[in-house]
Length: 322
Image 1 (tube, rainbow, N blue to C red):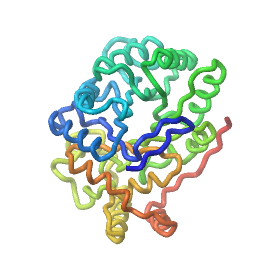
Image 2 (tube, rainbow, N blue to C red):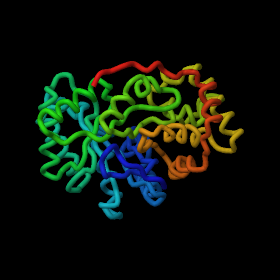
Image 3 (cartoon, helix red, strand yellow):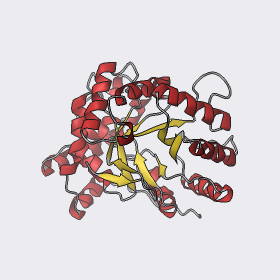
């Protein structure tokens, strides 16, 4: 396994990480199978496991916490997040001091551990003063409940504002952003976010590297009965003919290279120097193994040129001021 530094920090994470979104703790994957996936990932060299409070409304954290008791806690990097509603109460959401503090304490109880390595602001909260959010996180860091913090789906302007606030109040700076990023969904990252992150010494750990399975090639010839397409309503709108055409092209290129479409898609993401880790999902242990074979993909300038000729979706870079 390859390990990469998160931004200008001393923390290193595995280039491939495991995420619990839509899978662990849910009805989609049985508990024992979920636990086998987590174990297989750790034993394959994965040290970073990404969770959030709202993944199956806390059950994802409980399952991961149950599994990692069999391993040395200091060998692992465990993250969680807060922002999305966790109940009907008006304060049980967002990035207010009240919700952040209560959310982290509840997450620690579900994990049954003393600290999380990384806490992510799961979105930017326009309804809460930024200094309130940053001060709450900084207090939890000083208490030892959080070691590092990051953002998720914060745009370039949000990132710049966050670092300006950190500097203004002398707080701990964020080291990582978690955006959606893959061959088919590039605009958010490549149209300006990368520049802001590089300017502030932040890395990315990206989610949805396979575009929810489209880039595995599983939808190239139709919709499999056991696919996410048939179990997640919003995903159906994401499977467009344009994306399928691109996925078929990537699959063909991967076959010519003697690898899989998934391995090529993951290798393409990790070729970006700002990416520290790509968060993969797995509903069975064999999928964990498949996600690890990106190491055998040799990306060259020639291959990247072929990839771009297939995708034809490179975004225009926007300018943002610091």
